[in-house]
Length: 298
Image (cartoon, rainbow, N blue to C red; front, side, top):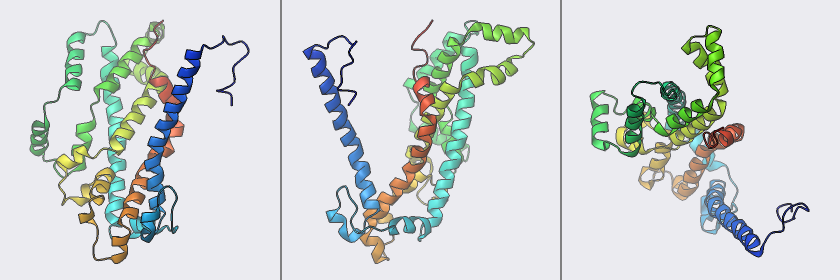
C-alpha cells in the first residue's frame, strides 16, 4: 500500500516518526470501528426478522423488508410521511433563510468602515456564547402563537453566528479590486452582492448549507420544547423517530409489531440518515475548501 511505501526522494523517517504514524493509523482504525459498529448493527436489525434478534450482531438474520414496509405503509405511515415532509420544509427554509440572513449581515461587517462594526460583532459573539435560556424563548413562541407549529422550529434556527463569522471571514479575504472594478462599471451594492460576491462564495455557502442541513435534519431538541406530544402532524422526522424509540408509542395490538419493535426502530433510523448520505458526496468538495476559509491570508 502507498501509505506504507517510502518515496525515494522523501527524507528518511526517524523511529519516532514511524511510531507516531503507526499510532495514528491504529487510532484511526479504532475510530472507524467505533463509528461503524452502531451503523452496521442498525443495518443488520433493519433487515432482520424480529424472531432472530438475539442472534443479530453485524449481519442480518432472517432477511426481510417488512420493517420498511411497515414504516412506509403501516398503521402510522401517514405520520411518518408527514414528518418527512415537515423535516424537508424546515430544512429547506432554515438552510436558505439562514444563509441569506448570515450573508447579508456578514457583508457590511466585513468592511472596516462599517459604523459600530466592533459593537455589532461583539453582540453577535455574546449571543453565540450565552443563551437567554429556555423560558424566554418558549414565552416568545407562545406570544407569537407558534406552539405546535413548524414555523417555531424554523424561526428558532434561522440565526447561526458561527456561519455568519465564516461568511465575514470569506468576504474579508476577497480582493478589493473586484469590488472597485464593479463600482467603476456602475454596479450597485445589491448587484455586486448577488452577481459577483455570492457566485464567488460557493465554498463557504456549500459548507454553511451542509452544516445547516445536517443540524436541522437531525435536530429534535426544539421540537421537544415547542411541539406537544399530541400534535403529531407537526412532528419533524427526528422527533417522530425519538418518539418511536419509546416502546410505549408502539402499537401493542399487533403481535408482529411487538416482536419486531427493534427492527422497526432500526429501519426508521436508517431511513433518516439516507438523505444526508446522498447529498454528502456532492457537497464535500465545498466543505473541504469552506472550512479553511480565513486560515491563510495573503
